[in-house]
Image (cartoon, rainbow over all chains, first blue to last red; front, side, top):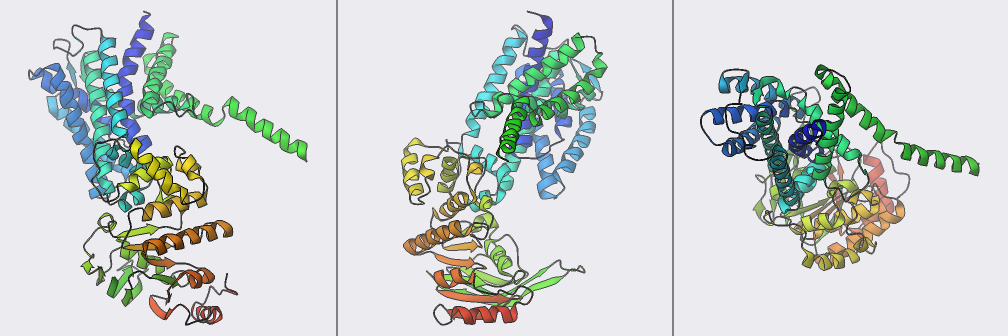
Length: 292
Length: 258
């Protein structure tokens, strides 16, 4: 297979776990959680910490999920217990995590080529597909449970959740922990994929996540058949492919961040000014004019 | 039933905007009755509801419901006793969920929410029957997201959800104010039917004097945190009620009973 397509698929799959995680806060809870910028490298650093200490790759990857969810707990505590605004809570957590990440291994870049990874012995793309599907299926199933629906209702209308006798904060906590756990998992996978953990790998990762979500939402926009998780995965894959294509066409890797932002802008404005919508509007206006 | 003793509530304590809304306010609500509450904006009606349902905490005063002191209970813990329908039709539902999902959630009210599937096929018929009682055709739209319903349909659903598990006390907070006159009448009739058949103790805030007279057993009028009128329905005519309302509630004169 074409390397360009293969690498975009592999990276897209890793980012789709990030996108599913951020979907929980960004779309379901309507919570602008910036802490993922710290949780993503944290996942990578936690993985590095445990794999270098001799733990198995699978266990180290799972621990990245666990520690990621603890980072979500910090944001929750700042926001709900200390009543600091959501956006600021996330930024504060992200800042704290920057130092914690550096403390974890004592350096800002750790090479992992000499250690085992969960990709050993299998095709990377197959391992990733299995993991992404497992996450998707678990997530879809969770959102169909009583607790899952309360999570959705909390983002929708907290008053309703309280009137059902439930403490809506509990569901914000579940959401934030789950979200950051998945982001940590995604970070650990990225570290193994690229063979190193770097302190800057989280910079503007929130744009990547939101871009994937927005691209995913732009596909078959009004279709109810596509689940939120499917949209996040498809979005991440398409988004990654566009970025890779841009570099393939001759742009420098340093341009990537700007390309990321431009993709978001393009898809957002496409949603507002889509040709189909414009055509319909024109028809309606023409009909109105004909009446007069 | 509901007993409020010596309630005091001040907003913005310690600032220039400090405003005491209740000072030693007491009221007793009888079981099975519908108490209509009238009063101009800012007289304390909604604050009273917010204190009863636990959204706001009072500085002083004891609230007992069926002999239980609910002062220390949080908003969500009081939900087992209290149902509330808000003025905003979206406040009582989850707009991005479907009718079936909303009803299934309220069916679990005050029970343990677990990791079992929320939607159970065997319950769907039961919910369809309940929705039929609203007479709005909602039983055929089970999979429609609630945000696509009209304000009246959404409010009917809110009312249904608030009363699905019979509450000890039902608070109606101007629940027809955002609706057109016809829908408003329809919802009022549904409300009446629900509270009479289930014999629910109700407190109803309204700016509609005609509705208050038509549907309440007792009428209470508030002005700046004080009860200025407390009568059984029938003891007072619409005209008298209006003249008291206008004599006290300056700034928002009603020219006729609307």
